[in-house]
Image 1 (cartoon, rainbow, N blue to C red):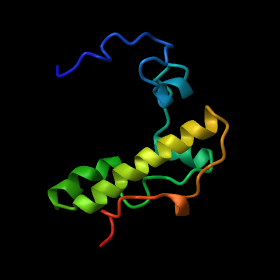
Image 2: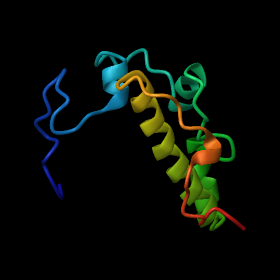
Image 3: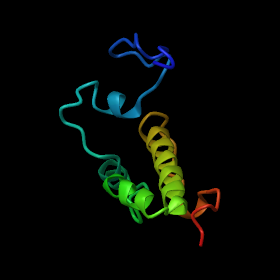
Image 4: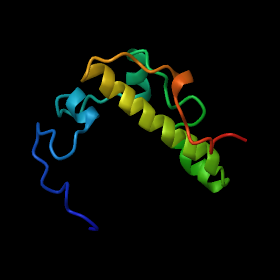
Length: 106
């Protein structure tokens, strides 16, 4: 492997890497809901509106790099929003306030 930084992660540990999904489900990954469903439950804009993970390969095959880029950026923004809301008790950042790279624009 290129790096073994995460090879020795301890269960219930948030160091050196904080995994919002592991924390949210108390490290029981048998009952996991997808990020899009969790975001809707918490009133957070879903990253899955234009493209979803199961469609990324098709977009890749069609050279739709801009759609893939925007999907990834929205996925990161959604993860940050979820972390801010459920872990830090901060308000949700509206979708209109997302600052994306613009690569997804045609």
